[in-house]
Image (cartoon, rainbow, N blue to C red; front, side, top):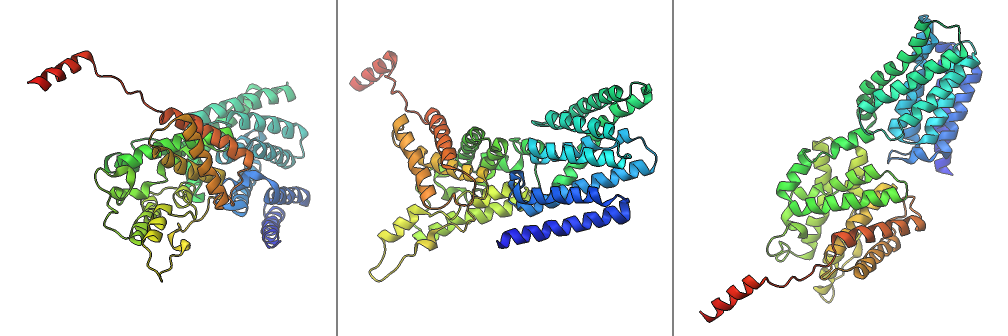
Length: 453
């Protein structure tokens, strides 16, 4: 109930500010303001896209409100300077919402809202409303799976062509210059979004598929450093990223975000890679350390990872994977080792051997937590085969579920079953058993001669 009141108060404040701005600065009547307030209240309470990152509904609601108010101000200025209504940047707003949130329903809502306001501001024109509504839908569809910046220009071209055709159908007597203005609007919006998008990402700490793909470049300084200094961790991270991507795709989560999160989740191991099993070449560094010291070294890779993330300016949505990929899980090996060496009157608390958390707050971070655990457990199987890998995967996922590590994310039991199926399929292909090939006849003969020499 407290959270509900908090969101209600926040949305009410936003609504009051917007209505006040409309009445005194934009000279718009009260009805559009009420429409916008109702829309914001709906977003604040019901739309799942606003839980798309760790900032929460309130933050995302503020981001969307900022974008819409910016759209209103630009639209009012365009009309005040007697610029044709064809240049109202409905397509620009839809591009920003679609690229930042990747949600078709959210883009649809904003297409309706922006088209209504464009029609109201243009003298209550129904034709303008319909033209911009359909154009907005075309824009949302064309930016649905955008992965490169050049595709923004393509989307702008599609939007411009659609707007020009619709304008010509609505006003057949219009001149060529007026039709061309509608075509140019889509291209101008695309150029503007291409320029403003990096600013929005940096200002709001958000990432798009475009910036995520830039992080996937193996020439990124952190990944290059991992290849050289911690090759075992690098291989582990690549496998985790790939299986996390496939698992996320199976439940319609953000598969690209899961893959990039998998790549960077263990960067904290770069500080002391030799203390982690996948990078050890000889005896373990933990042989001469007490379990409590070893536990501190292992857990510390979360803190070291955050320091590296700040140094290389990774976005909060990526650092979430660093802090949450173990949740508040138990460092089981060293906890058991501590119990084995316990004195008679000594007491070992389980809480002292747990990661600081927090637990995964999104489906993507939860998937990486599971992928990290199942990959490590599968790699430890002496003679892997499909049945053993399946047993280990189900055991790991069940243990994480029972331990409460998945309590704060939106994964259902059906989702977990799909994730487990993907993990088993991919890990069985990666860590399958090998055939013991017999020695070649030449090698056997040579060995036989040497034996009798």
